[in-house]
Image (cartoon, rainbow, N blue to C red; front, side, top):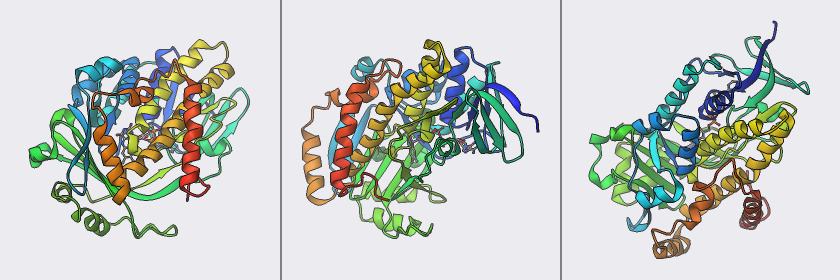
Length: 420
Ligand SMILES: Cc1cc2nc3c(=O)[nH]c(=O)nc-3n(C[C@H](O)[C@H](O)[C@H](O)COP(=O)(O)OP(=O)(O)OC[C@H]3O[C@@H](n4cnc5c(N)ncnc54)[C@H](O)[C@@H]3O)c2cc1C
């Protein structure tokens, strides 16, 4: 079959792929997006969008539309899932917005995806195709080739791998490793908000932290729906089987928690569970005219609620760095230099925060005591994340933290930062 020529080919039409298509088109590039699913869309439930994501959405020209469907919580509240005591809160009202220039939002992930898709459809520089599963990619120096399962072939001046956790494009860059299974699973879903009581914290993003478990609750879709994510470490985990992380395990774990937590069992979605994976930071994201973005480049645990936020930053940064550079090679190198250390820091901090959130016994007591002493209005610890501008990165600062976090992970696990 004759190859279809395109200046830019984006593989994957998730949040990362659509954002990168939009960002590149805004800089005057023609982009073709191919997605393996028969229709564009998102599975799952809610999504937290921190100010760094809202900054990127502004640059993508969709902030206003997205904001219409979002909810802007009053605070991010951390509660103890066993005792029911309040651990700490981060007010995300006026002072928080002024500090970062953008608010903290929560929304249905399919709403965000729909707004990005609409922006792509409205853009004459972007074309979109479904039902195209990339099975083979070839680096041809100043071109990249992609072959799909149905025999269709693409020849691109730039190929962007936005194909998620199990990325085929990443594999082509020489990474033969598999995602690391964390033995945790999530059950998640939304219900009409009228089914919830005020006790669920309807104006807040509430995170309940407990031993090897947590529960996240917040409203989405202008407040009409209520999102819940129940996460726990599966006692029945077996590497050679998929029969773990069951509804019975969920019920056993959550029924022993504070009544406000166990009450979520009545409303949480139980028809599907998501196993939790991440990968260690990847050193090289670029080969010839092939580059990775989003989960394909830096899949992370959701404990900082940053995977999609970072994918949006990637999109803005890639388009910006290519625009600033005289050659594609230079632009891709600048993109990688701008993003690699920062996303590694987010990936490793997410793991670190997971250890804190899932602490038990004495460790949980120390966590609560330390967090209860913090000044709720002190946001300095979030500046590196929420205040980050992907077009003006500070890689030295990020690198210092990455080496500390790697050391911490190695000490905690007896040598390997990523136990399988
Ligand atoms: C429980 C949970 C909660 C989360 N909460 C948050 C949160 O609150 N905030 C946040 O920012 N992030 C959150 N995340 C992370 C976030 O969902 C991801 O980081 C984000 O969706 C990644 O987007 P992506 O486009 O890079 O990848 P994906 O969403 O995985 O998209 C990849 C796309 O590529 C397509 N594809 C794959 N392979 C091929 C192929 N060979 N050919 C063609 N197409 C292909 C797929 O069909 C898919 O559409 C959460 C994740 C989980 C699991």
